[in-house]
Length: 189
Image (tube, rainbow, N blue to C red):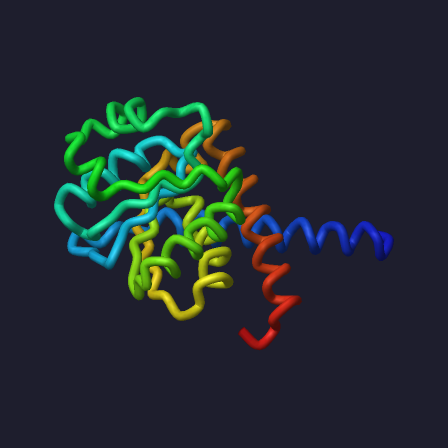
């Protein structure tokens, strides 16, 4: 017969596995709205393809400004503009570099300040699809009155290779921790 501790561990592991499966299915179904628009666009650095998608959104005027949150202090504006492949004119007029954020919580804090300073009501959040659920939790906690429009950047699915599976699993565990933190600190939200 299983001890209570082993049974509890088995139940917790089963719940985490079921949660990861639900998370993976949900995130795999996220699709960007081709007609999405807002007052501005925020892109969170750190993932493949994010900057290119945000640049394309800015070029087609899906938002009037672009905040690139989490820019490394050593990256120059010229290097970033070259990586974006956009004109100096568009970059100079409409791109802001956020250099304070070192993680997703920092992205949310940096974004909330930037959005508040400009009085925006609706913003597009561009990040990798697997990163969106946690990013939106962090951002909603800091900007409850701002409409956040998720704009997922497709990433390799967790069943395609070990690296992707690990990345998605770690993100699911981080998402779960943030969800629990906000659920405990504000159970009626």
